[in-house]
Image 1 (cartoon, rainbow over the protein chains, first blue to last red):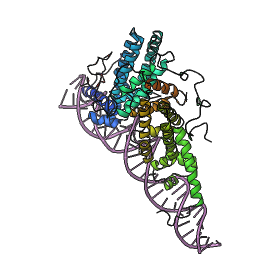
Image 2 (cartoon, rainbow over the protein chains, first blue to last red; image 1 turned 90 degrees about the vertical axis):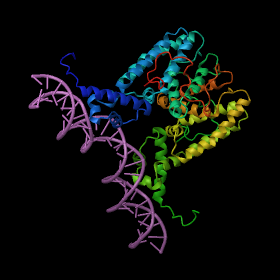
Image 3 (cartoon, rainbow over the protein chains, first blue to last red; image 1 turned 90 degrees about the horizontal axis):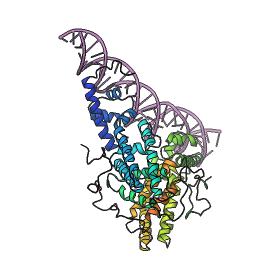
Image 4 (cartoon, rainbow over the protein chains, first blue to last red; image 1 turned 180 degrees about the horizontal axis):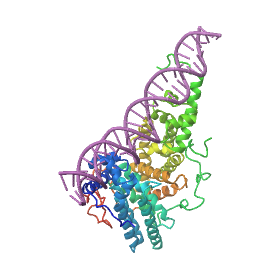
Amino acid sequence: MTTAASPPTRKDAARNRARLLEAAEQLYATEGLSVTLKDVAHRAGVGVGTVYRHFSTKDDLLDAIFADRLACATDSARAAAADSDGWRGLVRYLEDSMHMQANNCGLRGLVVSSAPSCPLVIKSREEIAPLVQQMVAKAKEQGTLRPDFDATDVTFIQVALAAIIEATWQTSPGLYRRHLRLFIDGMRAGSHREPPAEPLDSPNAKGSPRAGSRSPTVPIPGDQANSS
Amino acid sequence: MTTAASPPTRKDAARNRARLLEAAEQLYATEGLSVTLKDVAHRAGVGVGTVYRHFSTKDDLLDAIFADRLACATDSARAAAADSDGWRGLVRYLEDSMHMQANNCGLRGLVVSSAPSCPLVIKSREEIAPLVQQMVAKAKEQGTLRPDFDATDVTFIQVALAAIIEATWQTSPGLYRRHLRLFIDGMRAGSHREPPAEPLDSPNAKGSPRAGSRSPTVPIPGDQANSS
DNA sequence: GAGAAAACGGAACAGTTGGTCCGGATGTGG
DNA sequence: CCACATCCGGACCAACTGTTCCGTTTTCTC
């Protein structure tokens, strides 16, 4: 379909494309998704128009840059799911994925975004989800993961730790591992004392679940149940 | 000092101020800090100029609105610190503070912000910090909190859970309690298996602490230690 | 080389945002 | 009832974003 008459790419075009990719990769990794296309162009030593000649939109550029990172994350999940020890695989996947996020601000932003605009991010999530389910199921069978743990909780742990990394990576890049360990210790079989709330897909996991269970220590003015 | 010739505030001025406060409170609570001053003015039925007549800047407005919320948070911490059972106080403080954040998007944004621009937020943090330290110390003495827990970890738990709330409050407003419980279970004395990383104020809690401990499951291209 | 096709660069555009200004409406005190 | 201080409203400004456009430059082919 696309075999017809691909015009032989010009030398300068190829060079600029490479420069753009490298500049964007560096900038997005260190500065996060908020960097401007003007910044990318400037760093690459080209004009903004050139950026749009190679990438039709900003999301296109992001896709091109983070393709291998996301593939790497999928590989990590695959390897972890293949581990015969479910618990070990799960812990390794968490450590690996958070390690990647700790070293790439842009990747962190992509993973956390609730409504990702890049198709590759969506694809990556769809690929990883069943792998995580495998790990969770295996670890539960083997009795090392607390039985009320849900596969969807893994995503939220990643979101939570990403926020911690975001707040601390400049001053203590490795601090997040401390709280990852805290989460992991809470995931272990036998560490829970009370029945937790319902997992995500439970229909009645909504509203203020504490209502009637006990009154808060102090009145809470912002409480939707009280206000107005 | 301000007793001299306070001009008797005009009726419409007082009315508009009240309208602005109510509109801003509602909007910031439901929409988060990203709402525009134009939105606030429109909702209050006034013009933007009127907003700036009453509040010199956006931060001023935020301070005025969230003053009682922040005071409430401080009260919660005070009450929790007064609990004779350190563990119970700590858990209640976490539950209360997260409950407040779950019901107010704007408050959540203020608490999470790494560089708060509102003076009241800074003041609130300074007041709460020693109270949290009291709870942590007490719970450690009583042997219910794992001894390697640090008072600064409380802040990060709040940041982490705020991110979870941010991602889920629209679809499952109470889901965050599930992960709060996960964290709490990880905080219990006796739940840890390995020595965790150093707390925040440790001088050597930086760099990739995993280096040399073991190689990642898959190569990580974004790793700063590998790249370039 | 010369000429055409392709790529380049950055000014310009549209859409945000927080914040300013001033003519005109509105209360208030005498 | 009226003069005057005060307040109101929204047009306006500056700064920022992603994106488009077009005159100019570079490269490739003959």
